[in-house]
Figure (cartoon, helix red, strand yellow):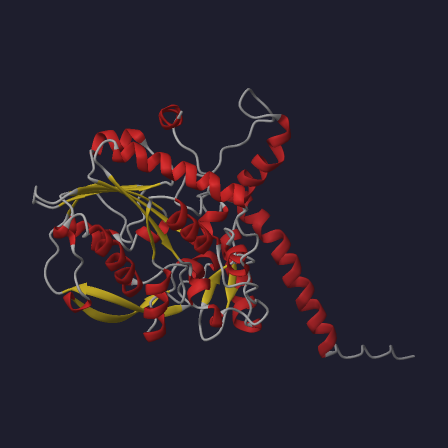
Length: 387
C-alpha cells in the first residue's frame, strides 16, 4: 500500500514558525550576547556602568538590593538600547503614538513634556493655598532684605512653560481647567503684598507667540526668539536701576532658520534622528563681547551647572542668576551687559556664591512648573536675621 502523501505546508503554518523563531531569538539573543561579550558593557548616559551590587553593606541596606541589581542588569543587558529604539520606532511610526508616558505628541509636529508637574501646571491644579503664598512671600522678602542691606538689588523672574503658551497644540484629550496658574497667583500676591521686584514674562511671551513661533516644537523650552523676549523684559526692568544694561533690539540679530535633529523630547524617545524641526535661531550682527571664563568647555546649549562670563568693562554691573533650564538660552543674551555674571543652576539662596561674586544684582528665575516642586527655604543666617 502506498504511503499517504505529506500535505503541503500552509502559509499560515510557515508564518507561525517564523513568529515562534523571532520570539525565541528575541528571548535568547540578549543572554547569548552577554555570554560572548557581543557588546562592551557601557552605560547609555555617558557614565560608567553600575558595578556588581553587594547584597548589603553599611551604605546599602538589604531592601535596596533589587533596585541596585536592576540598574546593574540594565547597564549590561546586551542590545537593550537597540530594542528600546526599535520599540519606540514601531510605536511612533506605525501607531503615531508616543512610546513614553513622559512625552506627549500634539498637533502639527508639536511635542510636549508630560512629567515634572507639567500637567498639573497645564490644568492649574492644585493652586497655592493662602498659607503657601505667605510662606513664599516670607522667604523672598527675607532674601530681598538681606540683599538690600548690602546694596544689592533683587529681581524675581517667572517664565511660562510651553504648554501654557501653546495649549492649542496639546493632544485633544488634554484640556485646561483654569486660566490662572500658580505663577499668576504668586506674581499677583507678591506685587500686592511685598516690595519685591517681580517680572512675569507671560504677557510679553503670549504677545510674541501670537505673531510667530517662539518655542521649540521638539523641546520643552523657548527658542532664541522666545529667549530674546524674556531677555528684553528682564533687562528693561534692570535698566531702571542700571541704565547701561538696556537690552539690544530684535534688529541687532539676524533671524536664521536651519533644520536640526529633534531636541530634548525626541531624545527621551531615542528618536532624534527620526524627528527633526526647523530651529528658529538668532545670530548677532556684531561679535559678542562676553567671554566664558568657566567652565573651560561650556555645553553648546549652556546647560552647565555653573557658568561665569565676563566683559572687559568695569563700569558694567555684576550679577548672579539662580536659575533653572529656561535660563540656558538667556546666557548669551544677558552676558553682554555685565562685567561679570554667574549663572548657577539652583533655586536656593547660595550665600557662598554671593559672597564670592559680590554682585550688584541677584536674579531668581523660575519656570512655572517648578512652582509645584520647589520647597522654598533660606539659610540659617537669613532665618536668624528675620528674628
